Structure formats: C-alpha cells, structure tokens
Image (cartoon, rainbow, N blue to C red; front, side, top):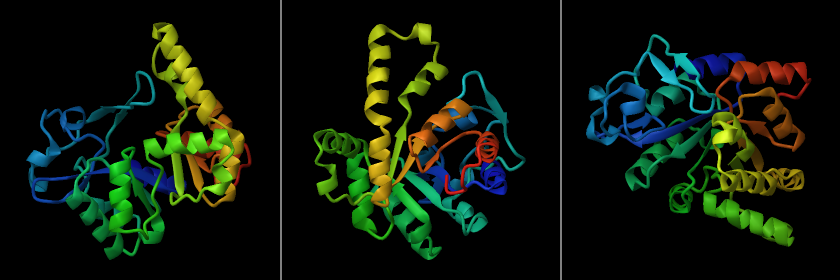
Length: 263
C-alpha cells in the first residue's frame, strides 16, 4: 500500500497488481503464491486465513533492477483487494489473476462490480484458460492478451491478416525482452539465450504493430522498464505507457521530454 500511495501521489495513471485467495476466501494482493520471498515464511497464502498472514519483511528485493532493495512503509500488512479499491476509487487497476481458480475469478468480479469499477479495471493472465474464464464471468471488464493470444497476434501481424480479424482484448501487455541483459550479466548468457532474446525483441517491439493496435483502441503497455533509455524506446515505438518499479523516474522522464499524460 505504501508503494501504491507513493505512485498515485506522483500522478501514476494505473496500478498493476496480482491476486490470490486466502484460506478463508479473502482476495489479497500478492504476486507470489508462496509467502517466503515477501515475508520469510515458506508456506502458500492459501494455507492461511487473512488474519493469520505474516507481515512483509522490512527490506524487499526489486526483481527488475539488479542488486536493488526497497524499504517498506509502516503498514506491512498484505492488503486486501478491497483495501486498494477503497484507497484509490478513481485510479484504474490492472489485475493479474495469478491462479486458475473459479472462486478467485468470481470474487474479483464481484468486488469490481460492488465498487462500480468495470470501466476502471482490466484483468487476465498469461494463461488463456484464465482469460477465457474472466471474460465469461464478466465480459464488461476489459481483458488483456494471454501468452497464446500474443503468439496468435504476432502470426496475424506477420502474415498481414491482422486488420481483418476481430479482437476481444483491449490491452496488450508485453515485456521488452532486451532488458534481460540488464537483469543478468550479459557475459553469463549463452549464445542461444542471446539469440532468443534478440529474436523475441525483434518480433515483439514493432512500431507498426503498436500503431495498428492503438488505432483499433487497444492500449499497449511494455514492462518492466526502469531506465530512461528503455522508457524512450517504448514511447518511440508508440506504446500507450510503460510499467515501472520507479514511478518517480518515469514521471521525471515524461516531464523532461514533454510527453503527454496519456503516456
């Protein structure tokens, strides 16, 4: 919650989070299903009631920045999704449904409807099964492209068929593969790993693809970018926006480069 409050205070346009279910059926905000990395307890969230969940560690690693750690705020509780909705009633939220669980999907949908946030929410997962279930549960909440659908999208794009195929998704959220060289020692990558990274980057980071999707009303977000050169590349390619661990850096970049708030 400290990170969310900081980001929104800076003017962040959207929050991205992940959801799991506790033993007593509460929807909590957590990336990992297991508590070890965030709290030190090696056990799944699903084994605890919400009241039993341990607090966050005082220092947490930043996954998409090498050798970087952040200090937590005073409130070290793992938040409920409803806590986020209560705290940020007007801020769009991007929800990753982390597990293929019908109850989780139903409860997230119920919370979105209860808080009148269908127009402020996008949900889904890399799994096509989960995205299909989300769309079936509540087709009024926009969905993102699953990984298999991204592959289909690229196939349609490179064969020239994309303009003729309807798309139900309203958000494309993809990584910038080249950032792997910043997260790992590039000299430690094998030749095949470097080739795969180059190939994935060349296939995904296409200005004409981003422009086509944007023209169709589909928003394009690139993750997780933490350096100015990556911010610049994403916006030069026509991305709607970027996901970052450092909203202050992104805000400064946008202001210094006179980019519109829609970015």
